[in-house]
Image 1 (tube, rainbow, N blue to C red):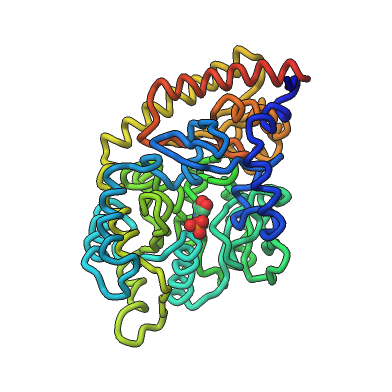
Image 2: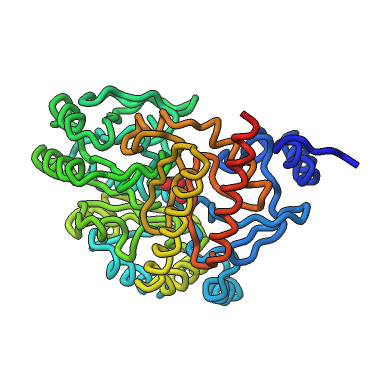
Amino acid sequence: MTTVTSALELYTHRTPTSKRLFDEARRIIPGGVSRATLAFEPYPFYAADAAGAVITDVDGNDYIDLVNNYTSLPHGHGHPGTTRAATAQLAVSSAIGAAHTLEAEFAAELRGRIPAAERLHFTTTGSEAVGFAVRMGRVATGRTRVLKFEGGFHGSHNELYQDIAVSPTLDSGTAVPARPASAGLEPTGTITAVYNDPESVRAAFARWGGEIAVVVVEPFLGNAALVTAEPAFLDAIFEIAHGHGALVLFDEVQSLRAGFHGAQGIWGYTPDLVALGKIMGGGHPLAAFGGRAELFESLQGPDPAVLQTGTFTATPVALAAGQAAMAELDPAAYEGLERRTERLRSGIRDRFGRAGVPVRVNGIGSMFNISISDVDVRSFRAFRAADTSLFSALRLEMLNRGVLIMPRGTGCLSTAVTDSQVDHVLVAIEEGLTAVRGNR
Ligand SMILES: Cc1ncc(COP(=O)(O)O)c(C=O)c1O
């Protein structure tokens, strides 16, 4: 009989088929998977099945899913209402390639929820949505530069795939030309400033004010501990950007999950432009960009100034799935999610407190983030200073106890998660903390 002595050995012992599949895949697919986010050390498990809040791997291990395809599944896996709507459309055509009534229907429903989306267009991904929103802002202002914030992730296209979660930190009150986050990207005119730092926004506009078309900001840093935008920071962005004739774009691709009217509804800001994605497709590839009506004139007419195309844009299957999923995400569903997630957030603080490990648990609505830190994580700098190696050890202990959370410490609940599953997660954290402390 094999004796298992470490969390790593236990993981390898529990997941031999995944290890074999990953090794085989790597011979053809560099990195093992096309979507880098899905690979983690020592190797990812391979999913065989999923139902509700649980994923089952190819070796028969169950995991409570707190990742939800990186926050995009509002109701977990195989949600009956979403599945029914999508399969009914699928039986007709997977991508009909003709105008479809569902498009305007769902657009009107989204307009009713999202104050900034007076007009909107659908896209397939959040990356495209942000990219097109930026384009609308450039056309409206006649300028080209984009101002973003360090730690902000807005998708994989050139001008915004800059200074994301792994970049070095900037000094407060400064702004710099953005640094590409990947080999192969050309330098762009993008500027990076410091999140939650009004002086940094001022510095950016003092230097590049006449050239900045759009300020792109996430209501919370989805890739960096869910650091939340403070009111003084958002106030400064609106005041300074508008004072210089620039537009404000909220990237709500992820934060749409925060509340029925998105994060903008919670904080009471209406940006000029907005990008939406993730949950709005109910697990299918669907996103959108929207904004003030007059900013969208360049998309009107037979020969629009901005041309948006895309072979798989707004397929009826994705529209039907998104419409069904969002219909069940009514204010009562958001309230239930918030209540259950708050119980989880405070339970995590409690378990860490009992274990004597310093923690900061950020999060809003159905989202939470665990940072092993003894200072509040309200800036990108504080996010970068947290103890990631201790968290990685804890995460492996959690995996071995049937709980899946993102390697960066972030998780979210779907409506499929039950109270007893929240209890299971808390036990996994408690036992995991005991194990990692014992190993140090
Ligand atoms: C805030 C934010 N914007 C944009 C994107 C890009 O969306 P997609 O992955 O659908 O292209 C993401 C994806 O994680 C995101 O979190």
